[in-house]
Image (cartoon, rainbow, N blue to C red; front, side):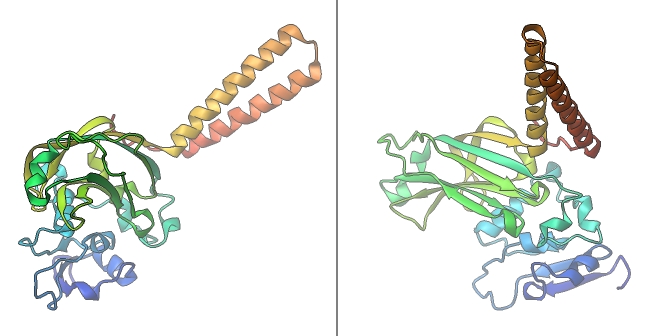
Length: 298
């Protein structure tokens, strides 16, 4: 290893998805990754695996309007768009490995993301490119290999393509490492499957819960005037939900105990209920001692 102020410049093919040497190197020094020379048409590589092993500078072909550039825009939309995003602290841990989820369990808490796609607005502004649209929406989660998932809605049957509506389009994503995850919405057309009619990409930590209007952008990440999706976002921590369920069970046990105390003189049943309640309270106490982080804004 050299000095902390020295930088290594490497081709994309030199860095693997779980390059342990690169992870260790990036904990002490700065690396720059650039597209390989065979990309004569200025295509881009996926920057996420490079970020996941700690690479600080990932160079892309800015002139190319593709998904890697949209992900890059989403990454640096964080932190007030100042151009700098601090890496999560766990990436400097000696046991960190993006391909082994067990290496993250002590430092990261999984979340369950539920996305409900409800409708679109002014999607008709994209009609000139493809004619009759027959739109659908793809919802994609990007991040660690384990977390990458894609789901899509059915084709909207509305004749009113300016404001299509979707019903019962609920997608659930189990995300093991939200600190490294992105969510991407893309509007496609069944008529022209190659066309991206609009997209919106965000870092998972940048989104809020509830009913949200998602402004759509074109492939160059430029705003599409008045075009948006209406969605509902819910992000929950499984540990929080487990604790709420345990409290509910304790309350039901106490209620049952009181009813039995008043109506039935059965010491054995009351003793069993008392023991059950005590075990539940001990379990809750242990869970709280382990603790959980509440990181999501409402």
